[in-house]
Length: 591
Ligand SMILES: Cc1cc2nc3c(=O)[nH]c(=O)nc-3n(C[C@H](O)[C@H](O)[C@H](O)COP(=O)(O)OP(=O)(O)OC[C@H]3O[C@@H](n4cnc5c(N)ncnc54)[C@H](O)[C@@H]3O)c2cc1C
Image (tube, rainbow, N blue to C red):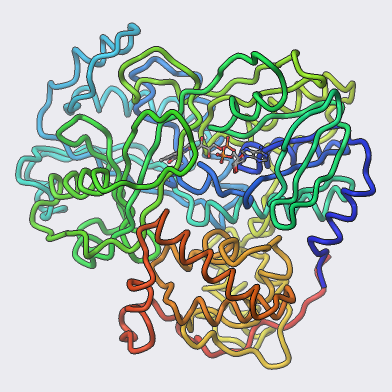
């Protein structure tokens, strides 16, 4: 049995002092926590909701340099992002993979004036970019990808070749460019896996989800367990404010008259079920400017299509969701680039939204706000507070390392360990070649008495962490969700800081995101979680009701839609593994 939440809370109750308190368990807070923990620092991470439930669960899932940022002259950001992208391809190969990206264009010369203006600090309205400006950008992009770039260089196609290769694209498209970036499959899981790595490698550190920073009295921080209401106090030497779009709100709890750092913009995405669009896209992401000149993305994800995003200024990060006008806007953008593919609201499986924690900026054009990151000390609170401002998902390691170095400097500890080439979670010992993968699957299949298809599915979901599965006496599939087994769900709930049904269904797995969730699956999964976490019948019902409300409010998925996905669903509707009824892999002692 793994360490339970109660045991972790017990450790927090026994602890009066910590060297560093990191507030906010998004990707940047977790990265800073990992960096500090690995140096032996006594660090505590608290996250008010679940880990990775803010902006970090809402990205377009691109691990990229940011071709667009070249126009803003942000060469340093692009270089750093490409370096981090290349590192992630090596350190987390179970989730990060190459993403061939197609830029369809309808002219050659457009965008040159705007790009020149942007480069010199102007903020022209976004508009289409023609092939000349894209060619220049991609040449620079290849240059900044460096000598160690593991991905192929860019290529261009004229009208005839573009039509031949991608016939479903709008006839207005006159040419296309192809370049390579990367994508992340399980964004939320990568954050959790870093927390689990720290648990294994730096036991002095402690991370708690559903615990919020509620206030600071002198040098004593008040924390509140959101699940029980219990209040806990701890005295930190340094606080790291990694609360993303909530940074200014958090600082209001810490000091009077704290300066404002953030000017967040909301972005929403849709997950669409459209076999025709999946076929039209193939393995490529289509990265295009819509009629407003805003860059949109479309690519296949878990058998469906991810489409996004919007970029709208918001005053508060609270309660954001994909609104109806955003839904229409995204669907319209998809129709512009693939007019022959019929797509409508009935094809939407899931919607999600998040707020980019961008630095406060005076510009009328949100796309022009820098995606770079910075760290700023706030010295007005009873404890020094380091604020993590801005940043991209892609650059979390570099951002966390920079923040940790500033904290280490403050507390007088020298860095001993670097994370540049450190594998993350199930990326450790990941089979590096096709041959090694075949061998891995064969040996795991033999060891666990499962099919190679099931071993491949587990490798794709959990990387080499799949080897840690602990089977029940007799494993069986989740009846309403046969691509998952009961032991697999039990293992996640038991080992991965799951405290609510939403943690399991929205962030430890892609069950909701991939459109596989039904009411029947909710019932079954909640029963399995209740068995592990000891929920009463009332508590289990409350968990289901809470999640159904959340899904309806935040993800456009109401109880009727969930019920419509119940049992008499046809097999072909849901991706079924080769061998869903296999027993799990057997218990293995990990080194
Ligand atoms: C629509 C969209 C698309 C994007 N696409 C990409 C992309 O494709 N590639 C890319 O590289 N980047 C992308 N990004 C950017 C990236 O997702 C964010 O920069 C990154 O996730 C920010 O992480 P964070 O940890 O700083 O913030 P968050 O993930 O928001 O974490 C902050 C956390 O603080 C917690 N918190 C708040 N107050 C408290 C408190 N008082 N106590 C405890 N906890 C608290 C919140 O609950 C939250 O979980 C995108 C962002 C958005 C919104």
